[in-house]
Length: 133
Image (cartoon, rainbow, N blue to C red; front, side, top):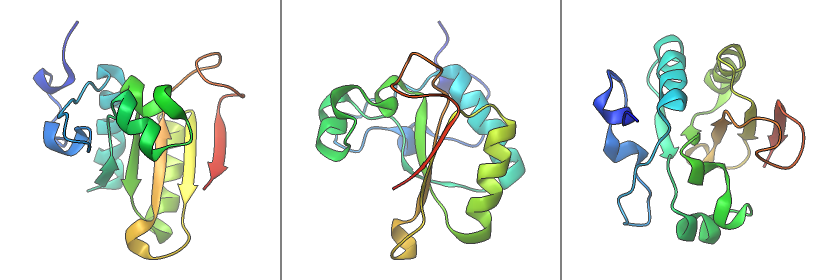
């Protein structure tokens, strides 16, 4: 199985996708990264707020516990707001992202859009799915 960082993914670095807890894991799924790359080519520069999360870190920062979408390497949170966030959501839907979480309240620095490509049966609830934080 090919690692995403050994593939021609020009716009993302291991550092920006690493778990923020210090474990330095960046076990992102190759297909997800290719989808994200295609989205970034349309939307333009995107700041990653959260990429991969190890189970321990995810349990500390998310209601999804030890096995949320970020622990699969198939989810990311992108720090973005306003019209660019709306554009990102439109583009992401066209690139088969099935989980779209929108956090657009409060200070701009805390606003983000969650993207994942999980399928029916991999997580509770229907897919595609849209929610707000």
